[in-house]
Amino acid sequence: MGNASSMLTQYDIEEVQHHCNNLFSQQEIVSLYQRFCQLDRTAKGFISADEFLSVPEFALNPLSQRLLRMVDGLNFKDFVAFLSAFSAKASMRQKIELIFKVYDSDYNGKVTFNDILDVLRDLTGGFMTDKQREEVLSQVLQEAGYTKESSLLLDDFVKILDKPGLKMDVEIPVD
Image (spheres, rainbow, N blue to C red):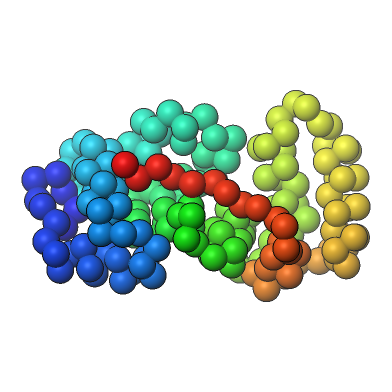
């Protein structure tokens, strides 16, 4: 499973479906496999960072460099698991877990003020000064009960972001 010359068996489809907590239908998995094979131009069975950058929406994303660290070298099963956070059926917690990983650039399980500031810099570019970003972030953290010195864990992110009415509707088309 995973290179363009092979086909998915029913067993493969069910295994991938189980691996992504049934967030994709069998037909969606087949569509994702076709897309995976298109991206895996050298039929290695995994997708490199350069291959991911061939997707225009991905390359234009201000967080693409952060996301690349998460996706470089994914095989098909892990590719689907990564995309499952973008599924309409994904829970808020699954979406927040992905966001946490984007912010946790050193993969230590903690997000610091500077980690968040780096993401804000990526997102806002020249539209805000560092001083403005720091002021906004300090205010947001204070309102959530944290300080500049706080290290946020995944549960803290869930506590802050898992609010009624908050929408995280970024979806990946699978057909």
